[in-house]
Amino acid sequence: MRRSQSVQSTGMVAAEIPGYDYGSSNIGKSPVTLGEFEQLMLDANFTDDDVHWLRQAGKVLADQAPALAGKWRDIIASLPHLAIYWQRPDGKRDAHYAETSGLRLQQWILDTCQRPYDQAWLNYQQEIALRHSSVKKNETDHAQIATPTIHLRHIIAFCAVITDPAIMKPFLAAKGHDAIDVDKMHQAWTKSIWLQIVLWTEPYTNTRLAPNEW
Image (cartoon, rainbow, N blue to C red; front, side, top):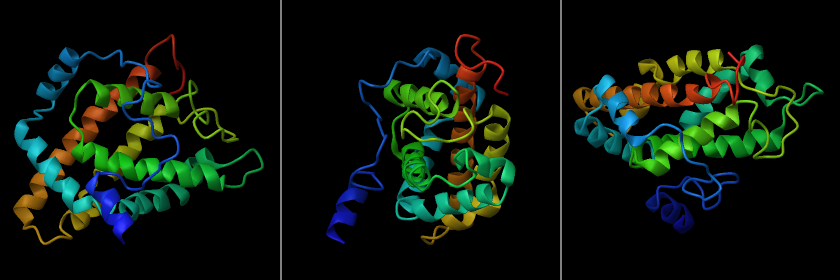
């Protein structure tokens, strides 16, 4: 119990997360500049008020990240055309890859809510995108997954699930916040996801990196 409380106090879902390199020198610099990202935030009407409500959401979701990530992954597992992204060439699920990527997904939930959207955050968004494309897919976990890329079309479409109020709002309401506050947290979460989708498309639309992986 003490260990769990210590981990949560640092904004981490576990003391050690394999392949989680946030802020590491191993992560390259995003090609998106801070100035360009500020313009994107203006496009999305992402304000300081949204930052505030994301922080509140982070407090609410801190101990629910495993359950929320599990909800999404159950949906993925139920769809054969998405489940293949976890499967080895023999058609069996790669348990190690599923576990380590699952921990990183849980941490991504907290990072979305708690991290400042600065250069380090931009850099890691680029790294997340690269790890879904053929540039770095399977490299982090040395996984033997049959598919060399997670196609952009499925990433974008699945974000409808990640922002679905029917899924998100029960989690955001779990600590007793009223409906107005839950709605504000959900709006801030949704704006952030849209901004991240934009950043994730960069390698896929860059002809030098991962073209033709739509």
